[in-house]
Amino acid sequence: MFGLGLGKHKRKLEIALETCFYPLIDELGNVPIPMQTDPAINASILAVCETYARSQNVTKQSDIALISDAAFEEVYRLESINVQDRVSAWQNDNNDAFNQAYAAAEAKTTADLDLTWLTDFAKENFKPATGLML
Image (cartoon, rainbow, N blue to C red):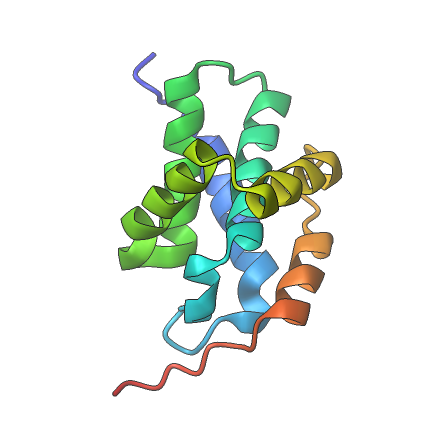
């Protein structure tokens, strides 16, 4: 019914991802720039979104896409579209790093959205954003 029920799922994912990446977020609310071009972290974000949506019985592909879009916007803000375009390219190109990370994230994602595994991965692979403006 016009996607009204999707709001709670979008919000839950936004909060989970904000909490997940909090150790890396700068004072302006930005994640580290290198995350934008990393297939593993972005595959993990997509897998979390899609796996969570399916666990909540969201089956319509356009609804899952709306939920994923909201999550990417929460993480990447203005760069969200560019990141999602890269994600689509990695999927279309059957990128090995992307596919492996997606499968691993899919296996670790639960309906309660405990993303400590993703926080640990992000902290191990990215330096916190600095918020420096040039």
